[in-house]
Image 1: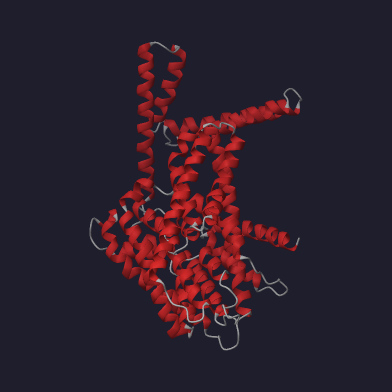
Image 2: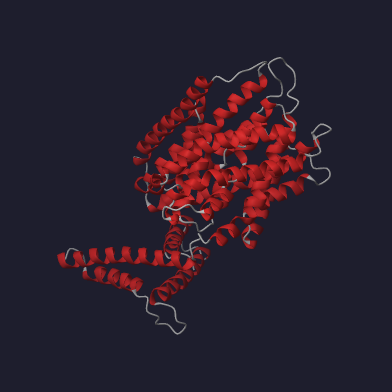
Length: 515
């Protein structure tokens, strides 16, 4: 009951904070981390210890799956080379730099410094997606940042396992061939299992038309991919990502509009709750871990700041040569693109889960004395990236000049809508020539499509005919909603009829877009 109470309190706290974040236009993860730290500092608040297995099994699969579904496979093909280089080379470079710096700055034993480097070597897909979701970045830059964070798990996980093996072993050594084989097993095996799960789910969903079953299948898919891959001793994260990318590309062919609306609504709620709770946990963990630090480690804030600055520097230097492959640079090196890609590469939940899974004892049953400091430094760097980089990311993107102007986005949307309406109008005219449909039906659809294409201001307030038509339809639907409630309250229709007609009106209103 105590754990359930904590989760409920976190949900309430996270929901309240996220509401204010939207109103103030502040990234919710950054504000949630700060709220978690503030809550942990309140006297009487119990210490929070979250098992890493809970984060890895319960929280990560749906968040990773949701991020992978949003990934554009078309743009990924265009930037797969820099994504591959970042997913391997930058992970190794970051781990090495942090490892050497941790020995020099924090005085960690070399083995535990290597563990810290492996933990902090990769960016976190959950944090990157949550922070970058509202940024108007060019598609290739957005995909570069997001794809790198999704696909560098296998590399960092192998490094972490090798580092842990050295730290807990007495006189342990590095077996490079074995590490290479484990990397292939983790990444390749996870990809194969993820593709197999995606194929099986695709076959099932092709034969399913029940919205409830579709929703259940969509919620179970990431957990199935993760558990199967972990049971086979491969990368569960890679498996979930591959399944999400493949199913996200073919999802529109597997479901109809009603099911897509329901799936989107359900997943939006799940992602919101999980992201809110997990970023609050990051903030709550830091004060608890600091209290458990042994004496003589009071310089940890400066040490964490130095490691965070080092990670940023290494990332800039490594990213700069790769900016030639990103479309906005036109084949030239670009400090602006490198700066944005660097600042968007935040750490988050996955490094924290990895650090919490560090064993308490070595093989000879002696305690790993540096473990508390590694946990604090990891959490501090995560908090720094989420708060400092998260709160300033929008400003960095705007100053870089890479952000797409609202006019550009609106123009692209208008042109796409016109193309769709022209295609529909051509089909209607074709049907009219064939005389296979009633003329009244043809005329109604034709007038509706023509109104959508008419952008000439005709109303007194200067709005277009299409905008006026949409506003009138919303007013009419509001009147119909009022009449529907009146019929129900007067006992002239049943509850079943009420729900059916209400859903039809909701779908029609949703089709009009935002007011």
